[in-house]
Amino acid sequence: MNELDELLTYFRCRHLPETPFVISPWAKTSNLFNCVKLAVATAQDGNKASIRRLQLIRQQLERQRIVNTK
Image: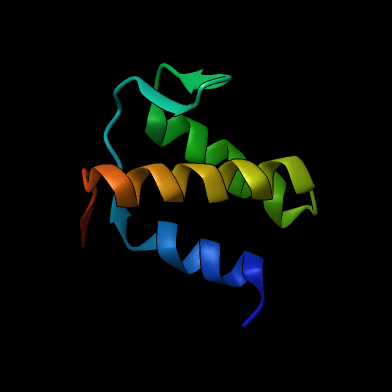
């Protein structure tokens, strides 16, 4: 399984809140659900920045443990 498939699988089975979320010291979003939805769509088209964004979001979520699985 490649890196993108692993990220897609990770986010596919998560309930993401529609709340503000700090991705990194340099990036934040006002709606985590929409941010991930857009990043997944563009990552599937090969956008490397979106893949990196998904990696950062995953790291933050795992640190904060705010996401429940389905």
